[in-house]
Amino acid sequence: MGIICPVCREVDSAVLPYLDGGWSDLDLFSDLSIVVCQGCGFGQATPAPSSEHLTEFYRSRYREESSDFYVNFAQKKSRGHAGIDFRSLSQLSLATMFCDFQAQDVLLDLGPGWGGSFQTAREIFEKPALAAIELNSGADLMYERLYGAKCYATTRDFLESSGRLAKIAILSHSLEHYAVRDIPTLLNDLHEVVSIDGALVIEVPHDDFRSRKATLAFQTPHLCFFSPESLQMALVQAGWNVEFIKTCSHLITPDGIGRPSPKVEIRGSSSWRTRLRKNIPDSMVPTFRVARSLKNELMRACGVRNLAQLNLVYGSGRDCLRAVATHSKSRTSRINAPI
Ligand SMILES: [Zn+2]
Image 1: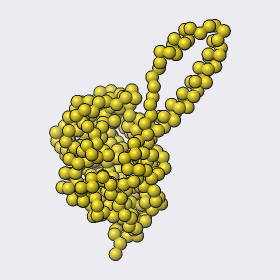
Image 2: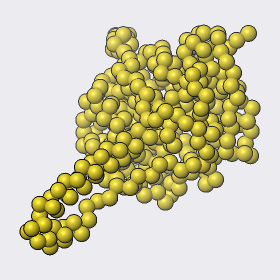
Image 3: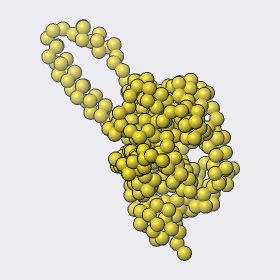
């Protein structure tokens, strides 16, 4: 008997091997398979590890020094690029198309990693209140130290301790880490967390295994795999109105374990250009202007390419899905209805 898809209820599914990599001493992900719904493209790793084991994994192992996802939270400094993380910039800019983020409004990031959304929010918003949901020990101190962000273990903790609602909540490459059994509850709980006039931003890898054979070298520790249809359906079923959903970044290609992400250098202005301008003879000025014009054109083209990479690339050339959702009107009226 086939497995019923938790998203679309279809029973037609295919089973793929789960590519386990990293944490070779753990058997948490070693006996998994991926069941892919042929109706909506949703994939789930099964049998999913228990909630207790997953909590312990993210608390102590996910960011450990031997991990590909290691972050030294104690030593971390703010990144360069004028304080802007371009992926966060594109996500936050998109969110503000659907909500009006004002001074002191809350940006809640569920799984902020090194804190790119916080760093960017401080550059583009006026006095944002920053909050994180993060299990990793040590991350909380870094978010507070670098960005003045408060850290909470759960959305419930956030609501009870802060007494605030989030104008924007972001799950950027977080949702795929949840076990499928926990996703409906999470998406439902987020209704309590995001203000009525707020927006929810979700970005996940585009992993529709109905149509694509290529994947990353390993899938650990992802437990859910989304097509555009399945992400949209999961959000709608949880009472969200999907305002935007698109693929972004490059088409997925196989890569090697531990291959570094593309690095792009953006150089500031150099004093040699000023010195050159002051010292050239008048007869050379027209030639200089032509050369400067060509150089500017070249730099503009390079800049656009660099921005495109920084804006959209996640990991090493990975195709992603980006969605923005708001409270659906029918649900909003229920929330506002007198008891
Ligand atoms: Zn399905």
